[in-house]
Length: 341
Image (cartoon, rainbow, N blue to C red):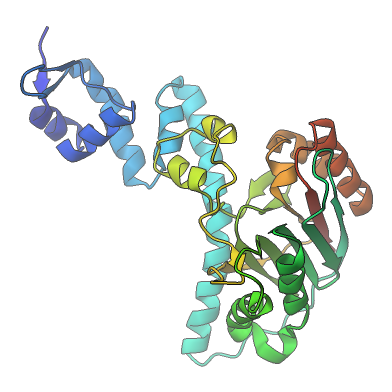
């Protein structure tokens, strides 16, 4: 059977030999044969279609973890999966686009356009769960602020960070200075705490018709818009970094022994840098913030069902916590929910 050297195969499919060696290591694109003496890789011409698909997907920035799923699907299933992935990308990109627009206007000396303030119907609750003896999670909601924090070493750091956010006046700092003010607030809020004490934090602060998003750690924010549920935060964890690199699938990450190991968090010793972005809210949007006590044990499809069918925010929060407890309640649970009027 005709075989192509790794160099010839690389030229034919548009991938570099270095990329092909990585994809072999990840199990994404195995060579047909490896010479036992030289270690040189050889490929079949029939593998070119798969390799070209990988090259196209990488060119548009699709993560390796997603590519691993796509290449083994039928063309129709792969198209649906790619469409769903791109919708998620657009939801995440929208937050950065809003910030860019604000910065461009500021640099050009344009005053921010007047906007009617958001009307939010909110609910929040934290729960011990069924295994832990102490509740280190914090959930907070009022018409201007929605926040969840998952503490370690005690709830103090999370509570302090949320208290610091409550002290920020969006009207006083204005949209252009809001994100810097939030960054300072959450870091100052945990300064002075013992080094072993820390917390994740995910929060939304209303400012005119915008929502400022602050996120660090593995608590999450979801947006339900027109019946579709999108995760709008990115976990700062070891396993998420491995998923991003294509070394783990999302399913493997869910049961990985290091799934709770954080890369970034708010700590007394050296507070990490949170992700900061601006969102334009629409009437009818529903935002859910939660700790991993919910997201780690309740599938996103079940979250979507509750968020889509239970209109009252208090009842929706209660049902989400009940789902987590029915799944074993292995951790504390924090939920905060807001409907945009």
